Length: 558
Image 1 (cartoon, rainbow, N blue to C red):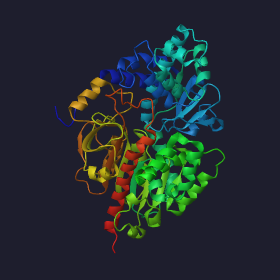
Image 2 (image 1 turned 60 degrees about the vertical axis):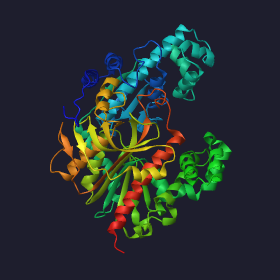
Image 3 (image 1 turned 120 degrees about the horizontal axis):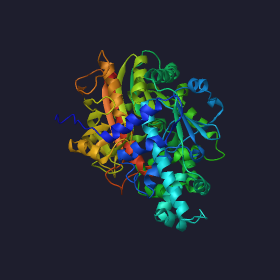
Image 4 (image 1 turned 30 degrees about the vertical axis):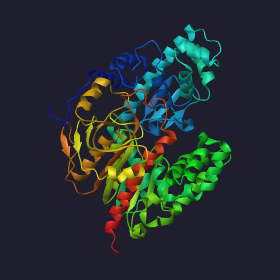
């Protein structure tokens, strides 16, 4: 066996995938119950208790966090790729309520009753959503059985709930967090009825995915002046804006006053400790993390407009859901950046000369899985010169801890079955100076999975023995799109693909660890990285910005 291309296959996972795709080819509704047997047989690492009679609260919490709060009322989920598809199928979703989830950025519309419309940007949305729905239904029904067996009459009694469900008070707290602020009403609803959902896929063609992302790019293109060099970044919608725009630092006093007034996550004392210790990075992390809550404080509706106006003056133009696709974008004009606005950590020597640059940064809020391929492909068709592609995202680590940073030079992609070799422009030394707690691991090997649920321990063991320690969802599709930029053909399948010697643009891939699937103790299946993820998130973003600045300054003549 070639040591760089582990021929790992999981019959259980393959069966699961074949099962739901074959069923979803139907033109009508398909019961989620039809997926359950294959789901149980897959022995997913994220649903280790699927076959147990006791509820798996971690898997239920993970699933519930990636579904909207209206989910207990939903009986029918309709998947489609465009507004017109839904309307042609008889779903007037333009009049439906927009709903959101805590753990996934995915456009959703709710009719106020039992039907939820879900926009899918690529096959990865199907691979992600079907196991989440199935796990949710399985665990809902197990919880219901235990509530009925325990003859629960008072759902507000945490001790009684713990006894009925077979957990402790911490487990009940996890369950309530998963159900949200209406947990009592949902638990009462759970006792009344079981969960029996139906799914319908309107269309899942590759062509429609491409058309969707083309609409997305067409909405961005007017802000990207023809002939300007482009640095592409896939990260999130806040890191680059905070580091380059300076709004949070300029409104420091107002944000700190908000922390004291609202006691937001008890961060005011932490901020005071950081300031007293002269620890400016921790103080900035608290400001950056608190900004979103500050902007959405009740009665402060004008603050978001203030941020966008401030960013616009700082050379950052934000576009929310361009083309009605839920992948936000920012176009950053390097020549308009103000040195005084920059976070001190990104001020490389000579940064004041960046005003002479002609380059733009196009930063997008990283899409899920194969949608990454479609979005980068659409962008590269619309720009004249691509100088860099930098990918930053969350990943599971098999050898590190939550909050660590991983930098890979090999990525095996489950979508194409290719193993990509590339020269990563980022190194541990680029990030470690900005990390006080986490470890930075470079020279790693990453596995791009189809879905967080579509893996099991035996499958992961094969890759772990081959030295793969990072599990993520976007790297492979981005490298497939990058291959098509430098080669006169589509990306291959099931090959070792070397991008080491390509010199058209720079590649940088970096991930921060949000989960440790081999450790149930550290696993974040049921909680967010929250404030404690700021160090690794911003360490990655700082390294990318510094790299772009340094590259661009080398091109600028004095």
